Image (cartoon, rainbow, N blue to C red; front, side, top):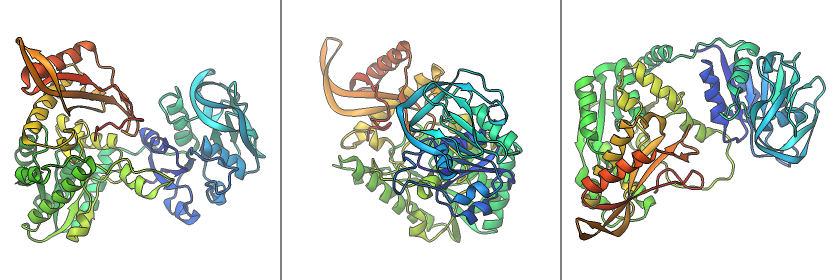
Length: 512
């Protein structure tokens, strides 16, 4: 589809996905492969350039992750970032050693050579460092092109072979001119044409779906979120009435959500929608369950059961459309280091195996921000396009402790007020997520001279680029006051509102 493409080799950096996204912001297609990808597979990808990501290792350690040496002989430009710089120096004959002084956070670079990679970058420009090793000696053919107070070689280049390396991270927002540096590499050095646009992607994806499906029938699990909604619209554009969407109301949705999905897809887009009212079924299943992992597992298994039952009522189905995104794909194939399971993933899996259906995943090459742009191109209402992420288990994991009909009603009403006020204040698009959490705590209060003993509610609002890290949102005092007053006055059962000021890490965004 796209001839000009950049390959990112992943050495385990938390910023690897960000590198690929920054390249795509230059309207150039990029993909992420594991650091040890065989040379033949790299050749098959036909990259116009390669970027080596950062990572937590030191190149001089035993078993340090290293790529195939042949990547430097492919005749395409290579850019090493942080650990990727050290890999390049180490493998090409330079010297890498532990730095006398570690460098983390903000630094200012002085440009020594403003050709190609650092063209247009100003002296004392702020960059973001994150390293404990440094380059003591450049490999033969390289020369330093920038330095900082602590790093004599903050950037280096072999202009003849078009090999470049940076000790800092140009992909993070803290590096003031990072986008310019990436653009210099991708557009000017690699010669990529800025052709990656959602309008052309729609045409290509539609044709791919048609070729794969033919006259077969497709089902799609529709949740009302942006991923499943865009998937449904794209598949419907390709196969028309051969698509049937299945929407399961599990009783754990936000206020008015089920009606909104019906109105949007059934009436507005005229997509065949199979609506399933399974509220009682899920509530019964959650009786007495307190453990959050058990909640997730029960909800996930029951969703698969309900979906399978309903899907079997539709004759001749051969395909299942899913809103898998590129970050999901990366997590399953990219760099794997030791990690702990924090909690089960929000999304429900297991359907293809259970139903023996062929998968259609038209969004598997896209990041979340690209999916939103795609949704706008397809005419999806802004309210759905920019909807905050909502967990698969829904309000069950925002209702701490046992889930009951009464507690869900209280939480649903309070959550609606949080979202109404956040939108009214113009903050909705500025936040990654904003929601209410009902606590398993009753507190004493006074209302109209009467003592009350009712639930406490937490309000959570965070800012984030990708949900992997997040900071609590500094919402205006007036907004928080309105939210608190309205909830306590309008929602029977709550007499105290608290605001969550925890960041991720160490906390998670969701409470369960």
